[in-house]
Image (cartoon, rainbow, N blue to C red; front, side):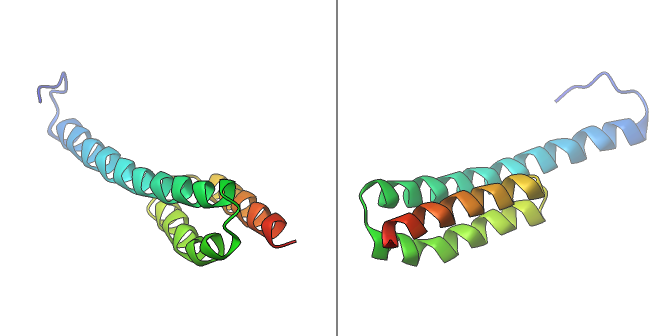
Length: 91
């Protein structure tokens, strides 16, 4: 990749930012996959399956937040939304 940067530190920052962007995209993609899977279980009214899948989904959300791929508040909002929907199924 060619860049407009001339200074060595600026070139290094470009490389680091690109690596971080790719890493964050991987965390976000995996998190979204787990959320979609859980949403599908909720749509099918599969309370047992959704309750089993919830801890793994929360784990993926927390990992994405921990590595900076997702903001802390967004992660908490997503976990809260999913938990509320699963609690509605059990009621």
